[in-house]
Amino acid sequence: MHNYDVIVAGGGVMGTALTWYLSRMGRRVLLLERVDLCHGSTGATDGYITPHTKQPGYHLELALESSKLYETLREEIDSDIDIELDLHCGGLQVCEDQMQWDLISGNKEKLSAGGLELYMLEIEEVRKIEPTVSPNMRGAMYSPTAGSVNPFRLTQAFADHAQKMGAEILIETGIDSLVFDGGRVAGVRSGDAVYYAGYVVNCCGAWGSELAKMAGLDLPVSPKRGQIIVSEPTAPLLNTVMQTGLYPIIKFKPERITDERIFRLGLGFGIEQTRDGSILIGGTRELVGFDRGNTLECIEAMAQTAQVYIPAIADLHFIRCFSGLRPYTPDGLPVMGRVTQMPGLVMCCGHEGDGIALAPISGKLVAEEIVYGKTSFPIAPCAVERFRKPVLPGLKYAID
Ligand SMILES: Cc1cc2nc3c(=O)[nH]c(=O)nc-3n(C[C@H](O)[C@H](O)[C@H](O)COP(=O)(O)OP(=O)(O)OC[C@H]3O[C@@H](n4cnc5c(N)ncnc54)[C@H](O)[C@@H]3O)c2cc1C
Image (cartoon, rainbow, N blue to C red; front, top):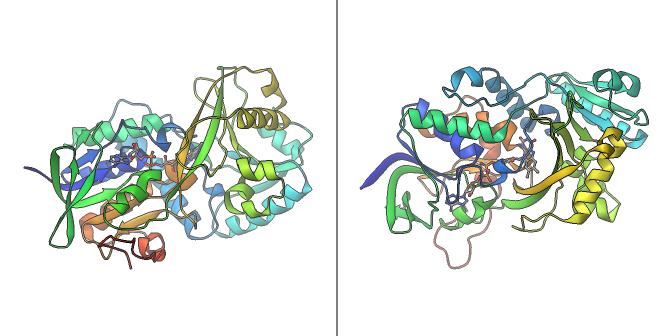
C-alpha cells in the first residue's frame, strides 16, 4: 500500500514549492502531476516578482513576505539549477498619458502607505533608468525592489531538492478521484493505483475547481488566458521588468476600460528581457475557458503597443508565441488552507497572475498549516470558506 503524509496534486510552481517546504519539515510527500512539471501556467508565464503589481493591503503584505523569502531562497535550495533570480533589476509601470499617470499615482500612494518604496518619475528620469523607453511617454512609477526569476528553473530546482530530501514525484499521473474514509479525504486514485495520505493538497492551478469538484466543492477558480510573444535574442535592451500603463487597470479594474478590444483582450501587459536576450511581451487577460491557443489579433496588438513604449522593438523578429491559463479567483486572492468541512483536503491554488511571486510564501504557509496547525503569517483571508458556495447538485460534500 502507498502511504504518505501528504499528497500534492499538481506539478507547477505551487506544488513543487509546497513539496519542498514540507520535505524540509520532515514530511513524506508524493507529488502527482497529470502531464509534466511546468505543464500549466508555470510553463507559460513571465517571471516577475513585483509587489507593486499587487492590491494594496493583504495582497501586498503577502507579496512582501514572499519577497523576503526569495532573498535567501537561492542559498537554501540545494540544487545545481540556476534559478536566474534577480531581486534588484527594478520595475517600471510606464504611463502613456496624464490619465494613466493620475491613476497610477493614486495607486502608488496606497502601495507606499503599505510600506513599499516607490517613485513617480518624469520621463527624463525614467530614461536614465531605461534609455530605450520612448520620450513620448508621460512618465512612470518606479519600484527599485522589483525583481524576476526563471519560473521553469525555479520549479525544477524546488523539485530537485525535494527529491533529494525523499519526496516522490510522479509525472503523467493524473488524479482521477479522491478516496474518502470516515468523512475525510484519505487519498487519491490515479488509474488503477490508489495512494493514501493524511492530507491531499489542491495545487492544480486553473484546474483547481476540477479537483475540488471531486470532493463536491464548487470552487470559483477559473482560467484567465495570457498570450505571450517572444523575440529572437537581441543585445541588451531592457534593464527593468516593465508594464504598460493599462496593466493595473486591466488587472484590477477592467470595468473602467471603455475600448471594446482592449477590454476583451485584456491588453495591459509586461515587457521584459530574459537572460538569453529574448524580449517577452505579454500576457493578455482573456476569459476564453481552457483554450490555450494564440490569436493573430493579440499577437499584432501586443507587438504594436509594445513599440509605442519601446520603439526599438520595431526592429525585432518575433519567433514564437505561447499562452498560459492563470488560475483566476473573483477577489484576486489565492485559495489557501484547510477546507473546514472536508478534513484531509487542503487548498493552495487560485494565484491568478501572481503565483511566481507568491510561491515561496504560499508553499511555506500551507506547509506550516499542515504540519503545525498554525501559520507564521495569517492565511485566513485566503480561506476557501470566503466564497460560501452552495452544494453542487447531486454531490454529498460541500463547503457550506
Ligand atoms: C501570461 C502569463 C504571465 C504571468 N506572469 C506572471 C509573473 O510575471 N509573475 C507571477 O508571479 N505570476 C505570473 N503569472 C501567473 C503564474 O504563472 C501562476 O500564478 C502560477 O504559475 C500558478 O502556478 P500553479 O502551480 O498554481 O499552477 P500551474 O502551473 O497551472 O500548475 C497546475 C498543475 O496541475 C496539474 N494538474 C491539473 N489537474 C491535475 C490532476 N487532476 N492531477 C494531477 N495534476 C493535475 C496541471 O497539469 C498543472 O501542471 C503569469 C501567468 C500567465 C499565464
